[in-house]
Image 1 (cartoon, one colour):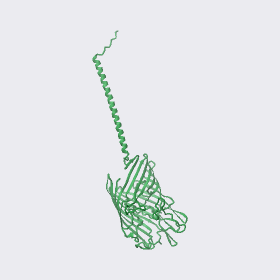
Image 2 (image 1 turned 60 degrees about the vertical axis):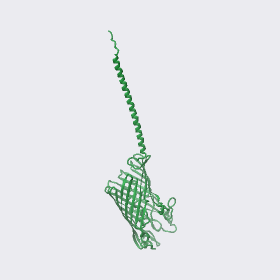
Image 3 (image 1 turned 90 degrees about the vertical axis):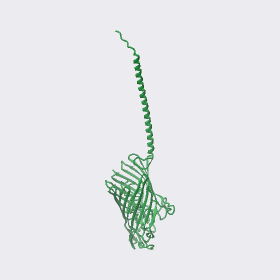
Image 4 (image 1 turned 45 degrees about the vertical axis):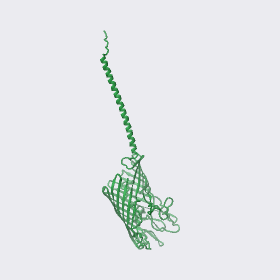
Length: 499
């Protein structure tokens, strides 16, 4: 059997095979070209993405996280604040006072100031603040706050030519907040924990009266002083706070004289305190003021209750003498018409609590043996705040501060506060040579005012406000009777908030 031989491909078949090979090669070349273009496109996309990331990072350096104001320095957001104020003051009784009223200094008829009115312009309440915040992680937050104005008055400050009033600390403190633990720490100078808060117990939530008057209103409980504070919140519904705060004592009454009686509290300042004899004094208390407060927010309104412990000390007859004082307070803010009308009520009652009222009544007086005696006192404030339109705020407050009498007369010398044997015989007559002891029994005030925000936009906000306040000062009766002094006060304010 013969095996047939394969025939060689014809020329036409070879040509077709070559064409197919050429087409395959062309397809391969095209695929390679497409791959190259894809790689180039991917490289361009990566480069573009890198440029975008770089631009975003650059913007992040000066732009705070969403929802925050201010500017960024590294991981810290810095937010400026404050306002520029031009204010006017008129009092029908002269008190030689700036924008802050001396409630316990309303003059009686024996003083020439009772027969003079007073009018002034001032820019000293203008304020600057800086808030620095940073998030360590999603649960831990750091903060620092500095707030200042120009209402300090050093020994050389005056209004004669350069109006050289110095910068003053209002608040300066640092905070740490742990969300998961509900813990909040504060150290530095801040509003006292005794101050009424609008929500919670954390800083910058204080319910400060809307008054133009820098001393606010009679019956408002507050101080701004250095201290340390810890607050625990329970699901932002219940808050418990404890603070230790710098102690100082206001006092009134004669201190006994003679061997062994050296009143070192208050004492003239030394070191970095004001050393101007008789102008400023500093008390030597046995310990800091201690304040514990609880706040509750059930869903309608804000409610508070708190207690204060104070430790007064003096040295007389070669012995240290310490007396304990303090009080209990409460407050509430009720949204009668949510976002339109609020009512608030607060008060404090106890012994030696005068320092915590705007009227600055005395905490203590002295007995014949040189010991301190805390004065029984109470303070109360009611307020109504309305917001009829987003650009208009209306307010009205009524306040009362009362100090009981504590007195004794030994060897013909009157000691204490509100002593009925003290003389008020000269209180009503200008230039009288008779005495006018005039220990304050009650301070009362009614005030009303408004703020109109007539511009608010990209360039900040501008507000104009006006306020009227009536202050009455009743004194304890003594020889020659008692008496009442009053003052009618008008204030106006133009403020620019640039931030």
